[in-house]
Image 1 (cartoon, rainbow, N blue to C red):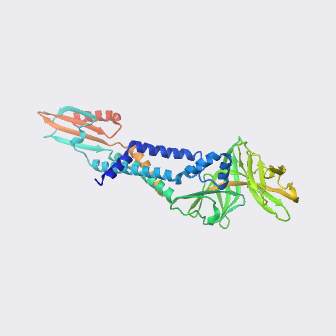
Image 2: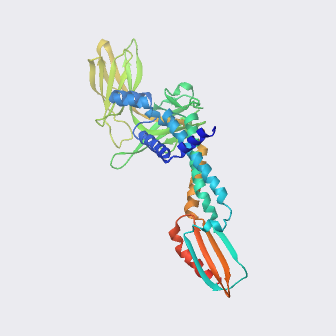
Length: 423
């Protein structure tokens, strides 16, 4: 009786419905990550809340912006790992039982069987059993073992891993302290990401197709005391135990200076692509006024556009507006002014720490090896029984392929012909 709950759990995890639900849940999670930005920055969260408030609440409620550390996805992966563990146990147990050369009873259900007569070649009843392609039987167990390793490693990644991102502008430095990232998506047992060395974004280098659409992004960065490194979308940078990625999120950063003898200041407004196809962004001045900046998206250019439309508002009251270029000043009430110093690029960098990366590669390697063995080698068992019949003997030939039965018909015929000739 004490084993009954375990038996029910095993049947549940082994159920085709459960496995289908697990696969569907994993597929839906992957589908969600293609539509919802993962590990967004504060700026990205604010933009989503402003543009799509209902969607933003849904994303927050279901943790769709950090799917792979969400509790519901952890539960799905844990169930999938349990199902894979049961399948692996059954397959390896069966492999151990069937690894040795079988007896005659194994061929009772053989798809190929024929009896022929030939001249007598020996005395008494003789039985010969051979097994070819034995190594192919390892294919399915290895394949599922690899998937199990990947699932367990993925679960470990979600528990121990950490992900974050932030916007960084040309000349900006990501410090080597805990305050470098405002938001971090951490597994239940993960430590916050802290870079071992500061990273400075020196220059962002967009590249373009001849049509003018974006081809890719690369960046020149300095690590630590000024060690130059190239960072690109497909060329991450390792800093200590953290890997830094350059994403395709980028745009102009407007460097604005408040011209005020009593309270001068300099700040940046980061612009992102909006629905009109231009770059736009909103910032705050020291006095609480809102500054809105819009700049054209000039395709094919290495540097941001040198002009921007700037509006300054105090609640709903327009304090000043105009088209500005670097060096121009927009006059504001009270003898103040707002100067556009320059336009430079900013880029969104993502950081990730994954202590379970190597088991994932081991799991994929095992699965690939399993596929190679499954399709490259097919286990074929052959039985030859010779029984004296006067001056002649009857020879029964049976063949049992593990799978792909129809393709072995010709091979079976050749074996029958060989045995009929006494060879």
